[in-house]
Image (cartoon, rainbow, N blue to C red; front, side, top):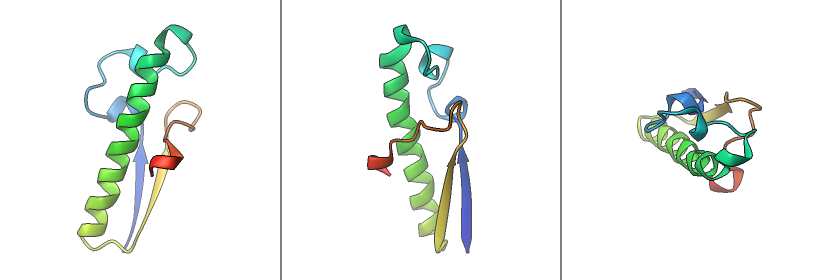
Length: 75
């Protein structure tokens, strides 16, 4: 079984304000960086769960803003 996972920052746990998801505003840089890590961790958890449930492959799509939010080195 193959699984397709689409992740968007507004859907991850703990997001309550635009400052946590806005990559374009310098004043929000620290919060955005923090939530990039959380987004990546949640994507990894979804993949691990899918594999544990019998998936043979998982494709993750970054669906937030410019679609360059997941930290590739942590996937």
